[in-house]
Image (tube, rainbow, N blue to C red; front, top):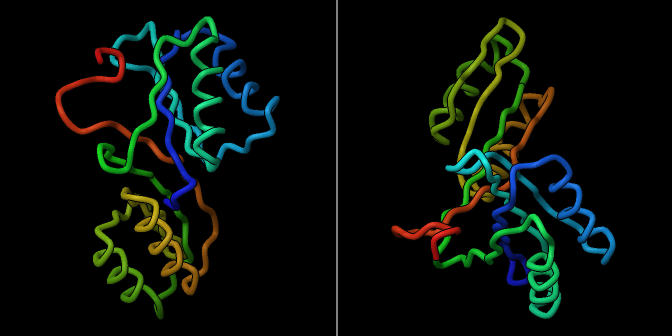
Length: 167
């Protein structure tokens, strides 16, 4: 991630419409979200939203201030590069031919990816890692012929025993 990139973790009520209210706050201010992931938290009454984006420190601080004012938002925090563990999941379907099969399997092994579906004409592969690893894997898949990709976007969590909500 570059120096203007940051990740915001948002703990919210797990209710209909909350994600729309959060994402529309970014839209109203003209900010682009690079990645967004959301899922149920350790307590099913709450969800955790992870957003990665680029902007100045002033823009970041303004967004955090505005997010904290939303009714269903319980906690907002920036996850720093030093304290955060960041991962992304990629599923990629590539062409599989007898001529490229061995090279494809070698590349999968080097990147510690997994073959999750196999046919005579295509392989579906899974890789998890930081964004640079995922991007490097994709670059290495291009010569084989990418059929389709699906990425989760970044998920992040802070190191250590504390949780987002219990700080």
